[in-house]
Image (cartoon, rainbow, N blue to C red; front, side, top):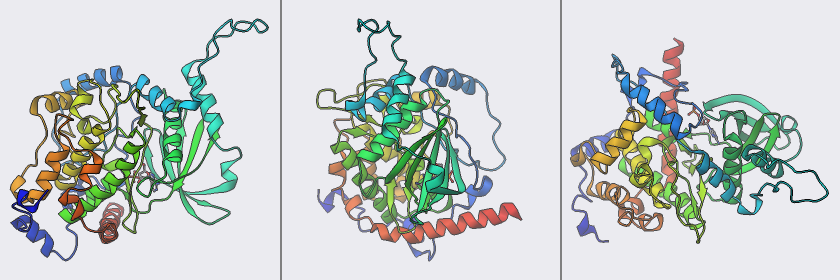
Length: 417
Ligand code: 3AM
């Protein structure tokens, strides 16, 4: 691809020039209406039937508009029994034991087949470490809540290393499968752009998953606080694409790429996280078909319930690109059924003010947001896209994250005052 394809490449738009002139990162002041600490939307994953009922209900209840622009809520994923079961089993196919068939042994009495939960619990017991995590880690503070439980900052008492511990409650439907998938994908897919797995334990009704501590928080939180320049968006896309290229080359599909599942480090590192909804495909079964993901980020083929492959993550990355530019994903405030309808009816979402952005950024989004997955670029191809190759070095994101932290501190001050 040559520069001629991108007539606006060297000439930044007026809006960009203003941004570039700013000495510090512009903050998203309008977003202060709902400051830090909100755990909005941290419901557990829902099965489609429930989601659709709820969505219908939500759809029928017209909400009163807020007096101030409201904060986009952190969107929660949809999933399905079969999808999670597939993800959990396929994440490590060798361990997906089938239940013993009743009456197959002449010496033992006929056995009831194990339920899916029992199989997953057994599987979980076989992969977690033995021992008492409370002796190994000292919990310092809660970092945030998710549908699964909560994440804590902790310290490894023997090394002094800071870690993050995700405590996943097992009471919820399918939670064993989600936990198995999350642990196996992280454990078996180590890469600089994937949050590092450290250890896991089963503690009564909870799984404790210890992972590296990412001191910059989520990209979602950064986007709430500051505007990003195109070079920074290019850098974040490159880092995520490196992680996705690695996962896709190992036939793992993330299926829930969005800003709240991208973690950042104060050194500028960018890593994919939250692997509970991942699916492992194989050369023989290279496609999935379960409707899994978070509505606004879901590719059209997922919405339609068609067979799909790793390029669904590229669509979601394109939507995340829009999040980075606009501050939130298209249709993010709409109920799930309405989102599906809009994705189907409107085709690929567009930038609100395309002229405010470079031809390179527009072309990059165009390559990600192709409704036809044959036309959509893959991670490897996108890593060669000039918008990505011209992105800033990841280390330059450190200043951005510091600015975001400062804004978040100010918000905390405002709410405490
Ligand atoms: O709720 P907020 O956004 O403040 O940043 C993540 C999020 O915080 C944090 O836990 C919350 C729920 O996901 N978190 C998750 N994994 C983390 C990690 N490895 C993490 N923070 C640091 N390191």
